[in-house]
Amino acid sequence: MNESIVFTYDGISSEDMGVILISEGGGLFRDNFLPSRKIIEKSVAGRNTPYFKRLEEQPVSFPLEFYIEEWGNRENLREIARWLDQEYYKPLWFESNPNRVYYGLIEGSSELFHNGLKDGYVKTTVRCNSPYSYSHPITSKYTVSNELTNYINNDGDKPFRPYIKIKKKGNGDIRIKTFLENKLINNFQLNALLDGEEIDIDCSNEEIKSNFESKGRYLFDNHNNDWLEFGIGYKYNGETSTKMVLTGDFDIEMTYQYVYLTE
Image 1: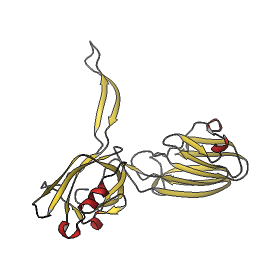
Image 2: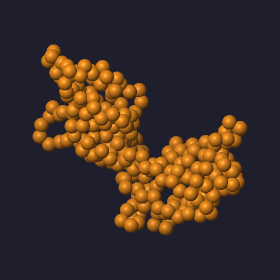
Image 3: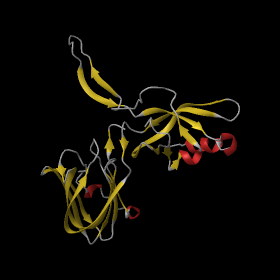
């Protein structure tokens, strides 16, 4: 990212704001390679080797330094401040790799360095909501009549869980099985759905919501508690893919993002 001079934040290009990235350092560019890790372990008296418990990965954090072009002519310093003064994580990507998205907020102090003639630059820090970068959202839509087989690619470095919208046709059950190298991974089931029922399924947060909830209909007892996750490892047509077999009568829209370890 450090070789970029243009970035996009919350859907707005820095070019449109009269802002270009700079770097005070010299020599080689320096980017994050792997997420920052902390080893959690427990030491016990009389044992030289501590017990390993888990790894904790820290959210990505990096400096953001930019020069404000034509500050005196544009008179847009307040506009730039409002653009960056977000209250929740917003998508951020850089021109050197526009297909890798971070979700970031400005953290800590932000300093404006200038010469008194409306000519200067800003130093601040971005903190992201996770240790990873992501692809832009990808949406796949299918119409299932009895049974459909398809493949979902995972071009990232980690498994991902999708967000799913389903509209049922007729009363009945639906099932989504996934396979890696012909091994069953998931067997997602929703039973006793109603004709025309629309269901939102957030596999990451393990939440299911029906559009009939206002009538007191909740679907947790209709679900087998198996959530879809698309891993890595199997190559289909040269890409890492999960085989997916969908059974039932319904329309489905599946949205997901690849997860990357490095920029």
